[in-house]
Amino acid sequence: MGNSLRSFEKLFLFCIFQDEIYLTIRLRMKKAVLLILLWFAVLPIKATGQSGDVIRLEGEKWVLMAKPIGYDSLLCRRMDDFLPENVSRSMGNYSGYTAFWEIRDGYLCLQRVDAIFKTPISGYKRINMS
Image 1 (tube, rainbow, N blue to C red):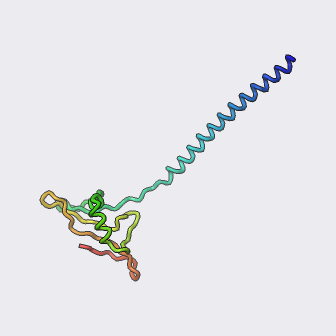
Image 2: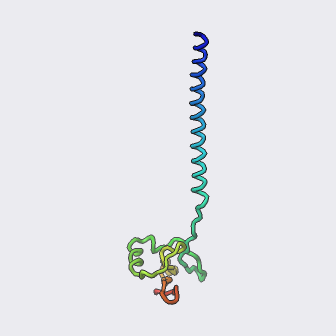
Image 3: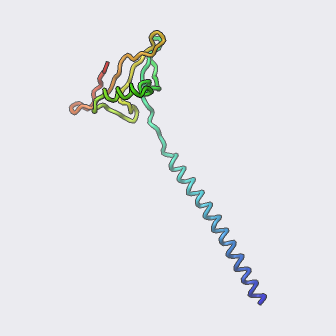
């Protein structure tokens, strides 16, 4: 009887250790899979640079990355309504236009707006909409 009890204890301990080993391996596998998925998710992120508006300050042209028309919801809606359907929107210029600005008497003033349109004959055509 003592021998069979010993073998039962060994079997019981073996099962407990097997469960712990299984859980440890499973946890490590989950961590490894999560790290691999995060690595694959972050690795291919390559954002397209946005083209900005143009501002003239003291005779020099600068790129204005904060497109002011987009910050005013009413003006942005009017601009979208004004632009025709065939305006060329790209990943680099999702608004479809480039605004040209200047500072006059301490105010930001819009000079003109340029846009590129898709035409069936020549492909693309730049239009000055001022």
